[in-house]
Image (cartoon, rainbow, N blue to C red; front, side, top):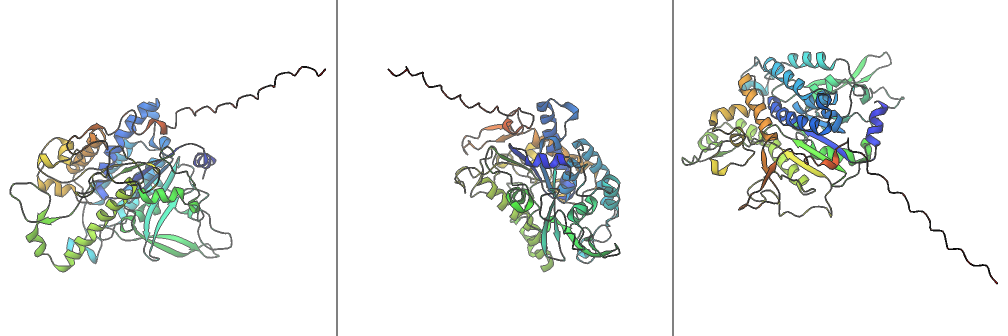
Length: 451
């Protein structure tokens, strides 16, 4: 790790974190939001086309497709370059399934080859300690041979960054970025697990491996809460201060998807599947439906928790019970951070039930349930569908969202990204507040000489 990064991590002042969800091809929705954010911050910084999100965020963390985006951004890529990569790479990765859906519990749907080649081409032999990483990076994966969720960071003060010289273990700092990213993106039933060299014998040959699956099968498909824990837990070496004016987490999803079965209502369009379809499902398919809901459930719980630790300008609508949590008391005496969640609801509904973040609200048109169902998949290869996802993300970044000071009867909106949002107080190019000089000690009045 470069001295520049150590200085940046330890520099006084507020810190900024970007958290990127997993979601396969739907990462293009994330990139649409980030394109808007990059344009806005570039203008605000005065750096124009020289600006990169790595200049703003002190730590970028992601899972699966979010790990791919996080790593390229930390390497100082422009968002549009990552977008170009995705439009080229996704059709190649998902071009030809090896087996039909029912057999994916026995054989992965796709070969690892296309992603392996792309990561080799673009990440090369860069390691976690690479000085090409211009900001903090956190990659989340699931190590299946030890049953542990892994979070690796490029912080030299992390307790596992370097192995002790008396062991044969390979220091985490020597892990190849391409291996870590591919392990984070190895979604079960889609790809094979990824082996990462973990130890070498005295001859220098690999003597042990760690086996990784997608970080989405851990609690960290949405990595925002784990990133908060990472930067405040001393073991990871950041030791950043909590506080509403000290810590910003900007969390971006890949599309809200909730798999539901319900009785058809002819008077209301819905993304829910007919309940009759559920009754006809095989037991194994019902088990898969339950497991597919895991990421949704835990993501909602994490968002709920983070919103109870902060006062987001645009609270995410959790459900019909707590709604936007505007009446929910904080879990802490004072806000622990500034938190903001951005995601689009990949659901169809009647206009009176749509929120600003519904895809039909964002694109300004009614969409067929069949089309939206296609957009909810992880293995999209059709360029037209990929373009819709990207445009949805761009529209979300430019949307007027409902503020927390609203009521159901009187919703108030503001721009999702604005001159004061993200809060200007977090801008790293702002001059540091001058330190007030201590007042000079008063000189005591001269005393007349004693008689």
